[in-house]
Image (cartoon, rainbow, N blue to C red; front, side, top):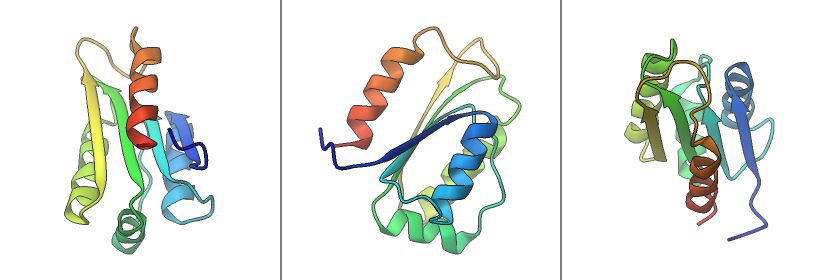
Length: 114
């Protein structure tokens, strides 16, 4: 695992800020790991710049999360910019942490720092 990389994590509104700050390059990061993030308005140019630098975006969410459609839309835009991304949609939950979030976080940290 590369310990020189800097990751930004956030839940809900914290995920919203993490996306905003990372995509606008206010906070330099190697990647984002977000749980049920709210999704702010992000310009296509910010997404392209984020993706161009090989930064990764990981989202863990619930199938009933109120922001799921916005999260999927953001990942679609990242995909169109050839960005590295992944999502885990947990069944049976909404806007909350899953019971296995700790192991998912470990998995995502390995993936994002690879």
